[in-house]
Length: 293
Image (tube, rainbow, N blue to C red):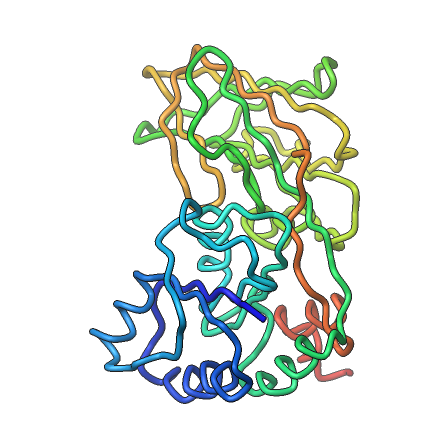
């Protein structure tokens, strides 16, 4: 069996976890395709010689015969893996070395049991929706899919944006705000959550439209079906605004219209037999710390 390992950087105190992680692959004679920049980091910065059988640098030399993709890091690293690998047939599994970890949800204390469950097929597959963003009036970016959210932001000006939003051709609202977020169910626990958006379960077939600092107290987040096409037209002072797609930013002229819809492909992740979304919410958001419980 072949697996791929992606990462960017980890801290020194994560060394024992990495030794157990790569040691499991070696002891079970698995083929490991390791992301070359991650190997360079481990070798030069942490003086670790990880077990691997081949390397890759991008989606162009990635081996599509891999059975799983392991992302080592936090949720940000997980998002990087999607852009760098661009394979939507192979499940992505997150080993968490970060702080929160909704996507990178395998903790170091559960690593051995998680690996055992994965390689003994004790899991179910979750298909996560992606957003496709088309820039009408200019050239599209190289990879216009995103897992968490698409957001428009003001630039270095203190002036608000005027964002007109349509759903399936029907006007939703004219937003006077610092920006607007269109989030998937996966992204509902990310940027959208931090500005007051609702939490959706991963299997929800919806998007969340959440304004950033709207200049109207009556404006609230809206949940819409994910078969809607959302059109955004942005205006304001200056010449352009910023569009973010997860961690990537793009400067966009006000003359450009954004069309956002559900992508035809989905991202596969794994749910182990002892993992439940509501348990994750309680643990990650510390809901159980109420002394009355």
